Amino acid sequence: NMTPSQLLQLGWLPWELVQTPVGPKQVLNGSKVTVEPTRIVETQLVRTLSDAEVASGKQQNREQIKMEAERLLQESNWAQQPDVDNPANPPWLTNKAEFTKYRAQLRAIAIDPPTSDPAWPVLPEAQWGN
Image (cartoon, rainbow, N blue to C red; front, side, top):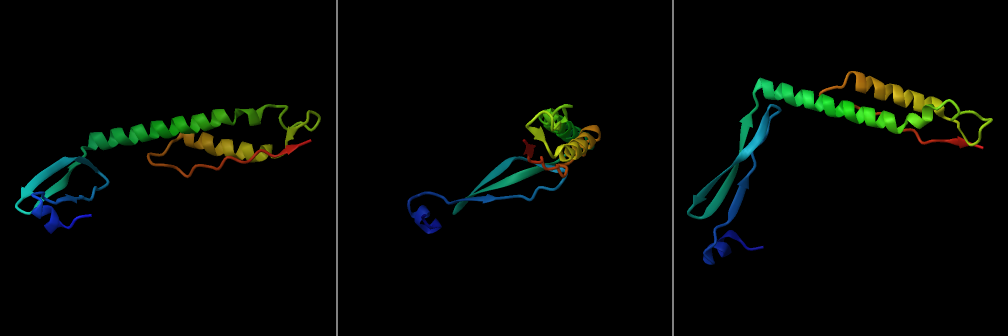
């Protein structure tokens, strides 16, 4: 790494990025570059979202969360088959109740998805009896 004074001796200007904090209703919106005698400064620009954009973003989040909950439900459908926990049909799932609870939590998310990332339930590990 070269110091700023070494860069200046070579005819190069050091570059500095000024990161701008982004609030909850803001997005990055490009940057502004300023050439000064001894450095180049790039400042990030932010833009405040309109109420319609905020509402649209929340609706998109809800839709994505609902799709993820439905995907996880579909992946665990096998655990709800009538014969999966039947000891007369080995191997059988010994912890079907854990899967039923997991799926109920996913259904609640799919039915009424939040606008931000929910506390996702943890997929139980299948336990099999012989």
